[in-house]
Length: 81
Image (tube, rainbow, N blue to C red; front, side, top):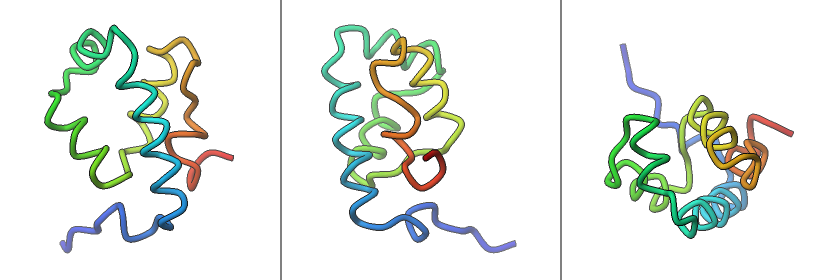
């Protein structure tokens, strides 16, 4: 089965919006705690920042773990409007 690259379906404008939202998450003092709760590494987060895309289910988790400071709509504008 071929692998579908997530970033191929997302516009550059949407990727930039995602990068800005992730930068807000990164600015939170509890980023390491959030990543730990999601069982993710800083490397994964860095890849999201670089690519401007993250899986939709992680957008929902980040919204919950940031108490809504960063929304799923900001993180994945292609999926949540």
